[in-house]
Every structure is written in C-alpha cells, then in structure tokens.
Length: 265
Ligand code: ATP
Figure: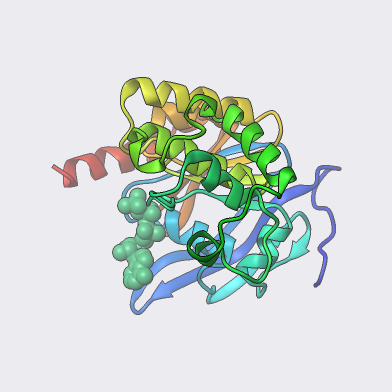
C-alpha cells in the first residue's frame, strides 16, 4: 500500500481526496472533489438534496468504486482498497438507515460490534452461536460504550423496545465499539425529536475530543455547532469551504440554499 507524504505544515491528514469523481450512468454524482480533513478536526459536509454527500461517503468508505481520483486515509493510499482495510485503519461510519439486530438487547448488539471481527459475519454469529458470556473483554467494552452513548440503563433491553433516538445512540455506539480514529456520521439527527437532537449533539461534541469527526447533516444549526470547518457540496462539486461563520456569510451558499428551498416547495 502506497503512503503519501504528510501534506502542508506538520499536520497529518485523516482524509485526503484528490480529484475524486463518480458517475452513475449519465449522472455526475461527484465531480473532481479535492478534500483535506486534518487529524482531530471536525468537519461538516453540507449541501442540498442530491448534492453528492452520501456518494462521497460511499467512496471514502470504499462501498462503491470511484471512477477517477485518489483517496488517502491517515496517509495510506486506499484508492483501490476494500472496505475492511479502511476499517482496520480506523474508519467508522454510521448510516441513515438502521443497522441494528432488533431482537437482540443493547448489550448483545454492542458485544457483537466489540468482538474482534473474524471471518464469520456478526449476522451469522447472532443466529447460530450464543454462548458469548465467556468473552469477557468484549462485554467490558460493550458496557463502556453503552455508558459513552447514554444507554447503560437500557443495557438489557431489546433493541426493538428502544425509542428511535435511543436506537440512533446505539448505532453510534456500535460504530464506537470498533474504536475508530475517524467517525463519518450520516445525518445523525434524522428523525430525532428536539430533546433527542440536543442529547445527540452533546454526545457528538464529547466525541470530538478524542477523534476526527466528519458529519453530513441537513440541520445546518447542528452542523455549524459541531464543525470546526464546513465544506459545501453542490451538484457533485465543493463550491465553498471555511469556518461556520464564513460559510453562513457566503452569498453563493445562501443563494444555493434559497434556490433549493424554493424548488422543494
Ligand atoms: P441527500 O441529501 O438527499 O441524501 P446527497 O447529497 O447525499 O443527497 P447523493 O445521494 O450522493 O446526494 O446523490 C447524488 C446524485 O447521484 C443524485 O442525483 C442521485 O440521484 C444520484 N445517485 C446516487 N446514488 C445513485 C445510484 N446508485 N444510482 C444512480 N444514481 C445515483
């Protein structure tokens, strides 16, 4: 695996994208994107519906292959590396859709995530193999993560009995159980009540201290509160980048959001 030089000052970059492009048939979902996220930074990726945010995440995590460009994670060239390699290097991602085992408890979901992955998939383990209690280290980690995401009191509760907000907390916990160095959050506030949003915002703020965070979020106030720096994606290209204050004051960004609001009725 090729390693890139440390770019810029002395700061190591968590993510470096160079000229990344992806089309689906005739649709240019992501076009020639350059992106640099420093280690320890928190970055918001915003943009109207269809701007290419999720496609960009899928390219970074390796879930879809790119057409053109290069992707580096902590200096390692991952352009052609599979998802698993990227996870081993410290990449963790949450999804817009729920990814939980609904019939299992909080602790069982977290245990499966905490258990060092091997060649057997967690779903197979969940259905075929239940004598888990003897694996003390993952249980310890499961409890620690449950505390971290505020679910210690729900440790023995089946996932299906959790509120929507608690399920999102658990999804985040499952990603944290892999001990990521960089966390890619995909609309973590989707479907949450005001109270749940506030809890989730505080939770993400607390995680920022220990890891690099990238967040796709439609709630601009939340995105601006969490991020040190914001990148704005529009029609597959990054059209603005800067501090939350700079982005808020950017006339092009204001115009795009006004147009998008009007076209959405
Ligand atoms: P949203 O905020 O609505 O989730 P987004 O910014 O995440 O949008 P993407 O989902 O990345 O945008 O989509 C970018 C463009 O690529 C859109 O035009 C979308 O329809 C198209 N697209 C995404 N995935 C596919 C696919 N698998 N096949 C065809 N077109 C796709």
